[in-house]
Structures are given as C-alpha cells and as structure tokens.
Image (cartoon, rainbow, N blue to C red; front, side):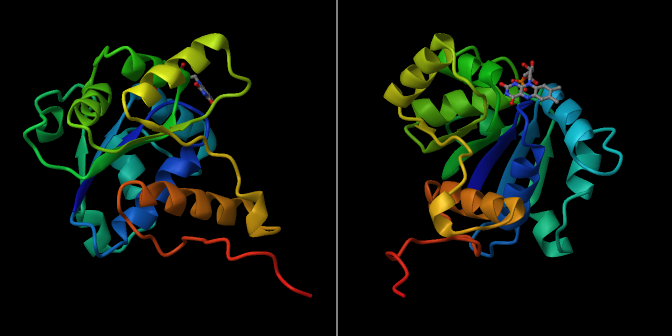
Length: 202
Ligand SMILES: Cc1cc2nc3c(=O)[nH]c(=O)nc-3n(C[C@H](O)[C@H](O)[C@H](O)COP(=O)(O)O)c2cc1C
C-alpha cells in the first residue's frame, strides 16, 4: 500500500509528524510519498522542538526506526514531475495534515500550484480517498463554501477535533486517536486506533 501525505501551513505541526510516525511504523504500508508546503516548514519551526531548516531535517526529526524511515519518499513542493503528480501512479489515497485554509481553497478550486495541491487534485479526479485535516477556527463563509465544494468532489473533511468521548486523555493521546481515525479512511489500521464500545458500566 502506498499513500500520499501532504503537510501544509496550518497550526498543528504535531498532527503531521505524529501521523507520519504512526503510519510509517505500520507494516501494512510500503511507501509514504511526503510533500510539505513552505508555510508548513515555517509553522513546524514555530511549533516543534529542535532546528528544522528544511524538509529533510523535518523527516530526520521524526521518531522512527530505520526501516520505517525508509518508507518515506520526500519531495519538494516544486517537484511537479514526481510520480504522485500523475493519476497513472497508483496510491491508495492522500491526507493533508494539517490542512490550512489556503490549501483547502486551492484544492477546492483546482489551483494545483505545487506538488501537494496537484496530488490532492489527482486524488479527487481518480476518485481516491482524500482526507483534509482542516484546522481553522472560526470558519468564514469562504471556508464553508470551500469545504462544501471539496466534499461534493469526494474529499473527507476531518477537522482535528478531539475525541472527547475517549475519556480524559492527554493531548498526545488525543492526537494519536485522531491520526488513527483519519488513517482508517485510507484503509490503514494504526496501532493507536480507538473504538467506542458503549458507556462503561459502574
Ligand atoms: C504559526 C502559524 C500558525 C498558523 N496557523 C494556521 C491555521 O491554523 N490555519 C490556517 O489556515 N492557516 C494558518 N496559518 C497561516 C498559513 O500558514 C498561511 O496562510 C500560509 O500561506 C498557508 O500556506 P500553505 O497552504 O501553502 O501551507 C498559520 C501560520 C503560522 C505562521
């Protein structure tokens, strides 16, 4: 199984790094095609520990075994000749995590500037799952209209809203549950997955 992961410049850089750590550690997955927007790196510098001068450093900072790290193929956003820019290259689906309002708008309107947006456009045209971890609050009507458009085109808007019903958990645990839940839409079962089985009886 191969998937595409796009990281854009919304807040929530940890969502992207944690998704990559969990997905790359999943033995059912052969390859993660990863691309980051310029803004994603700027936000990562603001929100993540350590020095992240470029995308390669972002990948190096992930907590991964060497086997898991080898599953990640990193592309620059300008690399529009990458395999994932073509519908002829088979992938199971794509997630944009986190997804900024700008990237949502670009995808909703087929702008395809850069590899991340093009790969998302390909997912829609090939009718493959496209999950958008859209992080913004509050929503303007522009955001709502763009969400409506991409949803009509087949995308799944999955805002990173905590699964409060999972119990009193840490932010890291909430992020894990969110990542696993989103991965389900790409056909992946991650270790951190949580299923509600009804209320706990006293
Ligand atoms: C620290 C920081 C946090 C940001 N948080 C958000 C956010 O949560 N949602 C959003 O839509 N944009 C956010 N932005 C703005 C985007 O980074 C900006 O609009 C950028 O142009 C998006 O580009 P991209 O979609 O190509 O990644 C943030 C920017 C910074 C620097």
